[in-house]
Amino acid sequence: MSMRGEARPTRPSAVYRQRSSAKFHNLSGAKLAGYSLAGLDLSGADLRGADLTNADLTGCILFGADLREVSLDRARLVRADLRGATLRGATLPGADLSYADLRNGSLFRVVGQDLKPSWVEDTTVISRACLVGTKLVKAKMSNAFIRQTDLSDADLSGSKLFKADLSGSTLAGCNLKGADLRDVLLENCNLDGAILFDVNLTNASLRGASMLGTLLDGATVDSCDFTDVRTVQYLNKRSVDVSDLLYAHQRWIDSGGREGQRADLSEMDLTGIDLASANLSAALLSFSVLRRANLQHARLVSSDLSSVDIREANLAGADLRGCSMVRGKLHDTCLACARLSPIQFGTKGNRVTGACNLTRTHLRRADLRRADLTQACLRGADLGDAVLVQTILRNADLTDANLGGADICGADFVGADLSRVVGMTVGELLQANRTGRRA
Image 1 (cartoon, one colour):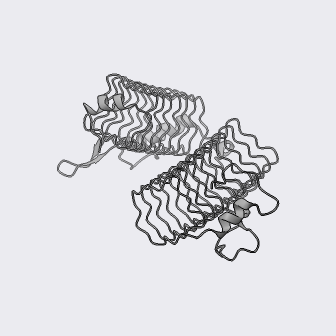
Image 2 (spheres, helix red, strand yellow):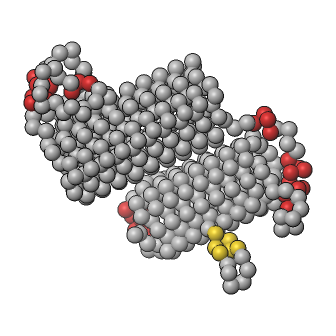
């Protein structure tokens, strides 16, 4: 009998007496990779160390289940009931827990029932787990205990984390848009490059957290504790004369590094700056803010643009060959006719090819028409509603990329890897696969 959606009772009900007296399944160490357990009631089940890789657990009731050290890589747990479950040391990279219920499981503690497992917690415990890239859209995680857990690049948009404890966890690149973070503990967390658009951080504690490149547009931060938070030091670097820095950088390039100095614009606020046609090849720009900047025809070959905020900027015709733009924020940016193809280094006979790295880069609504992305790594990139008209994507890696609403008219996908691409209809994928491949 499902308990989802029921109100918390003040005394044991028939439902709980039935649940608590049921036989607890012992599936510890079970090899269930790829199996379908959708809709099953596995309340209190012992699944320690089980292999559930790619398993379908849609709507599964895992209330108070022991999932310690379990492998749930790419498993489907949509609308699963995980209240009071223990996931210490579990691995869930790429799993889909959208709409899952991970709130506290105190209702399971029915007094006087000997069959209640001794390991059942009062709250859902996900400490020291790996949830890299996990999908937790609109998940219910209020009061959950998620300490020292790796949630890098996870999608927690719209999730309910009221009073959850995520202390010491890694949320780098995490999407928390619209999440309820009231009274949440985010102390000593790594939130570098995370997206916190429209979140509610009322009474939250972020003491000692790292928030380099974190986007907080529209966030509510009433009574939020930002003590000792590490952020981009805009004001401390505003005195830097960019023209002098560019001159020294040009000398560094021309002399092969013997003179001048490599440009380091990382963690600097350069909003709206005009760098059209500037030579910033091999420059350091990680975590910099270049929002609405003019970089038309700029030369950024082999530059480090990781976690850069370059939204609404103009990069039309820019040379970005071999650059690293991991977790970059390029919402609404113009990259028409830009070059994002590989570049070769070294001497003849000993050349090394460096492809552009746009892993998990945000390119929503970006204009990439006629841009060259040959061999570019776009794994997990968000290209939703992007313009890819006549874009060259030959041999590009688009594994797990989002192409929902993208205009791919005339795009060249020859040799491209479209494994697990989301947001495209079957017809669109078939059309793309006439010139590309799907592993």
